[in-house]
Length: 447
Image 1 (cartoon, rainbow, N blue to C red):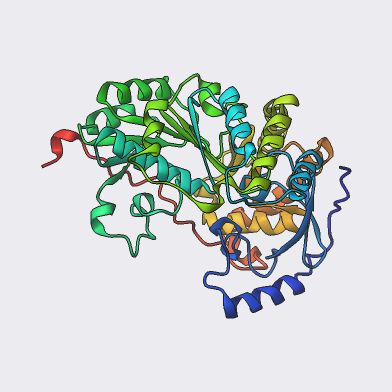
Image 2 (cartoon, rainbow, N blue to C red):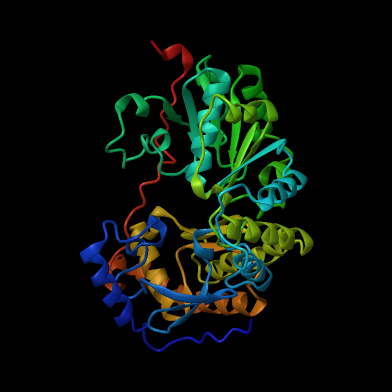
């Protein structure tokens, strides 16, 4: 769609957003359904809090302000807002119904399509959220191996087995906390030392922003196989973005199990677990994992339409090309202003992230400054470039021009050593995610 965003003289009016926020404070705890969308991740006083609509790669907040959106609804929008082919599939199914008293043929059709495009999909299980299928994968891995311990790397949802190792683990029994361990990405030697006969599964995001080194994923698969440990790829972010068949296709590594959700239905709620038939067979007898809305037909129709669109239009190649322009462009602009050692855009082209070195100052303050200035210029900015098929060349060039305007402001603030004084709103809040402070121990050290 044409870019109608213009640089604003003033920060956006967010009166209506604040009104909804004040109403929410009286009735909701918490007021956001997912942390990444909440006001803690957007500088209060400057950023909007509620969005009203989206079209293509643009969104409008409840005050009517328009923005280019690089958050992609925190991942689900692989194609874009109100994407015609997907919306038509939803509308067509809506005429026949949403949820039924028996199974629906779309469950079979989607599973057949998944089996065609995802390498390890000997069998498919359909659910509603990423946390659902991550937990189903862990449960079936424990059942299949007869083991209890889990090694993980990345973010895997809100359920007890994972959140127990984060700072938000209140309400989770200590016994459950003690069965999950974290490891450092690319550190294969630490994993080899720590693996023992009671590790049921290793679950990881195939990459977050750091690339695998020295055949890390291939070696991890071999180590798991030799130890009788199942390898699980959490492909919430990599699936259908880095390649049609996800990271397992891209890196040519076939895990025992894999989980998908964000990108596969362009915003509709659905999640997929794929894997070996012998492991998945346990869902038919010993392992319980069911949900009433797993067969909800609007999401099934949306997923089929989305995956076909991704396949037929080679969307991963588009995301790679356009994402590369914005990632490389940011780094070139940082270099122009002599900030290349203080800020850098990292990651794979389909999903990159702006980072700030410790020398730039308080990271949350620096990020808040960048965010407030990008929002002023009509870019809904949270530090990421989550690319979708609707991001146009105009969107990208405009965003790079906004970065070029903001970079000298950032430089001045950093050089002043008082970034906070440049903020018009509040400092961002830290996210709890635990991807460091790794707690696996070598097997020989365990008593």
